Amino acid sequence: MKSLLPHLPRPALFSPAMGASPSHVPACPPPRAQLHPAPHVRTRLPPRPPPSSSSAAAYKYAAADAASPTSAARMDGGAATDAEELRADFLRVLRGRRSDEVELSVEPAKPVENPLYQDANPPSFSEEMQSCPKENIENLKELIKEENVYLITEKGEQGRLPLLIISLKEDIVRKRPAVVFLHSTRKCKEWLRPLLEAYASRGYIAVAVDSRYHGERASSLTTYSEALVSSWKKGDTMPFIFDTVWDLIKLADYLTKREDIDPSRIGITGESLGGMHAWFAAAADKRYSVVVPIIGVQGFRWAIDNDMWQGRVDSIKPVFEEARIDLGKSTIDREVVEKVWNRIAPGLASDFDAPNTVPAIAPRPLLIINGANDHRCPLAGLEVPKSRASEAYEKAHCPENFKLIAEPGIGHQMTPLMVKEASDWFDRFLKQQ
Image 1 (cartoon, rainbow, N blue to C red):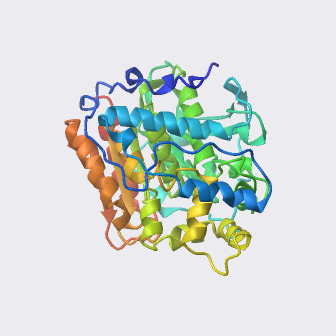
Image 2 (image 1 turned 90 degrees about the vertical axis):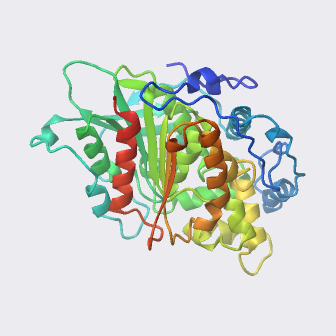
Image 3 (image 1 turned 180 degrees about the vertical axis):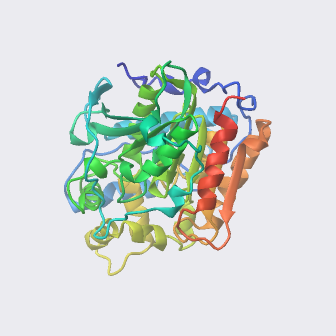
């Protein structure tokens, strides 16, 4: 199977033609809103030095990245052009730490009998996911079709992307809408099965993956933490968000070629880390036509500038502790946080932060769902992204395609209301009218 990813410098994957709105989505011409960058936004990332295992090299590049000059040059054109340039820049960063690229291929897999959760006390039940709307089908289990496959997205151990695909059995192949579901930190694709079956009952092809260093791509309770620390030390991988986004671009290559999936009706959603994956994958690839990140969207630069980074840092603290030691600090502070982000996910707190990547999803339907009291995704940090996104959707003449819900009194947790709102959003924009 030939990948649709282009060879630089021709980012053909993101051509305007591939971003055409499906007929069932309210028609919107390409937005022309001028999205002015925040002062920290750079025009281009600096050239990356060769990977090194030395701690000095680990933060030498991070310091240079943080000190790069600012420029508004990239944002002088219309929003559609800005988004295309942003996607091309992001793709260059994703490619910068790839092992050798390979032609996308598919391999058979078996169901996972004992899923690996990177938690000493693994979860066993989710009331939130069980609450997902589903059709009342008496013999649903008998009608479920389960597929387990691997996509080979690049060379190397982490280049094998495990998929769990759930749908209803049908005698005649027809094009159906699909939704990609992404798990949170330390969980895996099997955790999402209640959502997959609920969506399948409603006529969707439901797809879940193991993100990098999770599930079948992990070997111990510390695999993900070790990968983050290694990224800080060596600078040769991007296990926090970006490497999985690469996989999701490859996944879109696969899904759009399936005979049973309508390539114009592919949605994407996720919880927490999965919400970040959904957000960035949609910003990078317009083939994800409807987007619902749940408790994932946040302002990384805003959190640094406003001393509100602690909640997010605590979720993957070992890498920040390692950086603190390497930087000769007694405590984790703003400088440590900024250098870690610049090192393990270049541009996360600058070029590719929410103020730029959230508006880049326009005019495709985007529902952002957060908790109003979420310390990992502070609501105040979304004021600028929300404002810019609203402007982009207004200029695209489809303000109804963008919505942000902040559930009152809720911290960093997915709730039945969030599950229901996401379900309704997908039904509204992905189901045939």
